[in-house]
Length: 454
Image 1: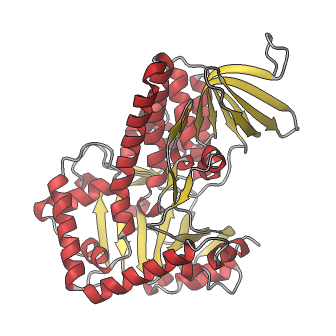
Image 2: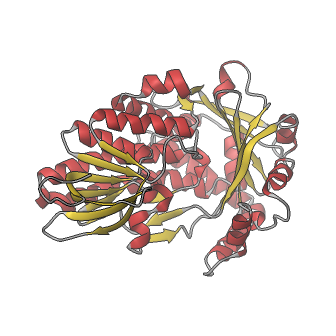
Image 3: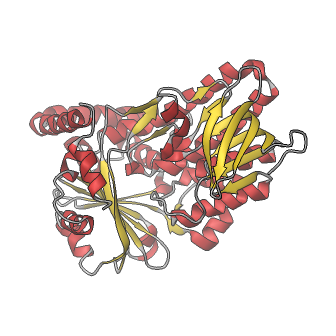
């Protein structure tokens, strides 16, 4: 990989993208189609395992613009018309929300996908769009040089070192958080903490009829479970739980997951014939954010910037939406460098606004009031439409259902006050487990997660 002018292992490009996941691939494809010379470096090889298999309806037009929607539908997708919520502790034990009931009726479904296949489709699409893509190449350092192109150094699997001079760097490195970690920008989310343990299973019954592709969410006393149907008869099953619960693990991770699943009688019945495929994986408190999404000559996008709890399947949607915003922002900065500060501020403001709208619901998802409202919904003031719109990922536009969301929040706070003893108990437990996470150093939760991989 030599540059004719320098005679060195050094090349030049307009934009260098770190990471070949959904955020990086979408950013690279969009910029390449805008005529920019783009290089994308991915440290692994596709296909690769990744959790986060459930997509949202408002990602569908983005996939269509990228030119991959038909391929997702035909080769990897399971049609997802809605979301099913289950509880063993409510009069109404099952409540379904269908995306065709959202405020915006244009996007009535999404897909469940095996991420290894989905990510590979997006990566190959970026290459078809004209981006220069490399797998098995790990970025080792970045030198930002004011007034000059940045210098990005990387190393291939064969040990060969190579460098690129680039006018702009997009960090889409996912949970590696390349720039955020090295620049001291990464922060744990002190408003929320959760851990997860999960695996893939055969022989798990799906929802009947047209609902067979629905994601199912089961509440239990330590958090919630997901069930996501994939192709080839696979069901992705995981428990997102309070970190203090994960530290109680005193057995192999597979056994601990089965014990956790048994806590919910209705889920245990559904899982009675399940057979595990592959290994059980675990992760500690995975919620974090970066203090800024940009710097001189760089932007952070997707999980490289922040990661929320996966309860509303927001990860890929935030990555794709952020990628489109990032690509358009970078393209304008390259055209008008003097507007860089204004453009990056606008990018970050829009990104944070969408995340805040998801976060309000995420922080309250395990409260009695939230359980009650979701399991016994009312469409007065079109509240069901507003909830379904959020579940569909309609969080970046100025909401037309603002009044409905306000009524939902008023009822939520009113129910919390009327049931203050239960609400206070949940609040106190949440404060306790947040305290465990933020005392500093390696917590028992971290150790429990590390042990789950042995």
